[in-house]
Length: 55
Image (cartoon, rainbow, N blue to C red; front, top):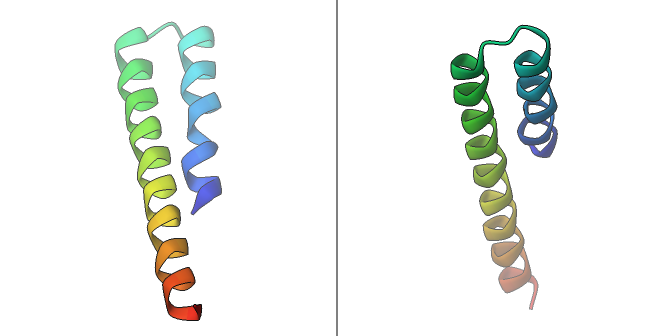
């Protein structure tokens, strides 16, 4: 899940630099950042649940 959130960010930036379609690249980058933030939030939530169950 962590890799799915991290990998699209450089891809969106690379598309913006090479192809030059800023509107598409910006939308893709925004989506990738949302995925990354969602993965981070889910990881933190999961770790809190696991910690609460083990203590």
